[in-house]
Image 1: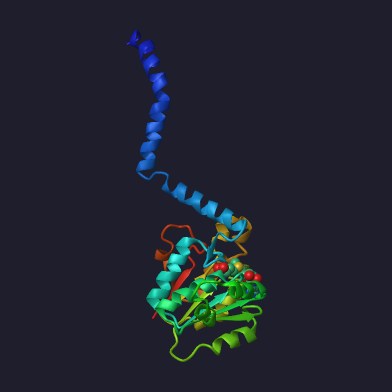
Image 2 (image 1 turned 90 degrees about the horizontal axis):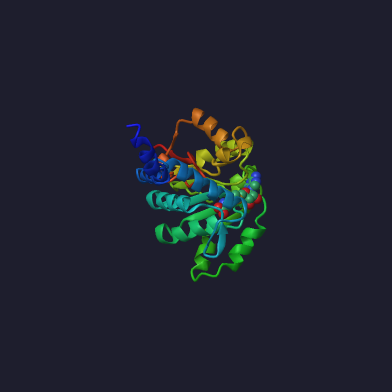
Amino acid sequence: MNKLRPILSVIMVPMLPVLTVAVIYFMYRIGAFDSLARERVQRMSQDGMMHGAPYTWYGVPIWQFPDDLVAYQEIVAETTPDVIIETGTYQAGLSVYLAGLLEEINPDAKVLSVDIDTTLAKKSLENLSVKGKDRIKARIVLFEGSSTAPEVLEGMKKHIKPGNKVLVILDSNHTKEHVAKELELYAPLVTPGSYLIVNDTYLETYNSSWDQSGAMPALREFLAKDKRFVVDTARNKYMITCAPGGFLKRQE
Ligand SMILES: C[S@@+](CC[C@H](N)C(=O)[O-])C[C@H]1O[C@@H](n2cnc3c(N)ncnc32)[C@H](O)[C@@H]1O
């Protein structure tokens, strides 16, 4: 055996890097690194978001990830809302996206969207150049002011007729205090079977300063006391999302 040792080491030492690569490749193939890979892509997506709108929809900047847009589409197709409320319009990318979906799903429905400053949203809508732009624009009602201002809420309520199905997406100021107030004001408008979507809960994992002061802690406190809503985890299929745990379904 002692005589063999130098021969074995001559053979084995050059083989070590090859064996290491083979083991790593095998582990990769069986999915041992899947959660790391997902976390990495989520972080890359979040980093991208910090440098500008990640995508455009019909040429309008939209501050959403593709997985979430598919989830919105699934929810709108399944629940056929008559009114979709969005807090935080910004450049109106999501309003345009939702109004476009409604063209096929429920053409009489409205998108009510509020921002403290609607200048950019109005500009986006003016510059919209797709052929169906007039129908899309007619479906969007912009409100200027804070989402928590009583006059904004009253203005929105005027568009909700008895029996209307209402979907709410919270995407404005993501501080805990503001999200908590929005949850208090907008949750009662969500109809049974419809959804309340709390956006940017991902900020908690992105920046530790948000773990106590952002949308996620507001959401946790809300869920602890309001038992009408349950988290629909199936909407966060692949984790690349702005709203982990933020898709809430109102029970019948
Ligand atoms: C993340 S952006 C919205 C992105 C948009 N929903 C989209 O998907 O493209 C957040 C917006 O919320 C607005 N905002 C901040 N505080 C607000 C408040 N108190 N009420 C309404 N909007 C507010 C900001 O002006 C900003 O335009």
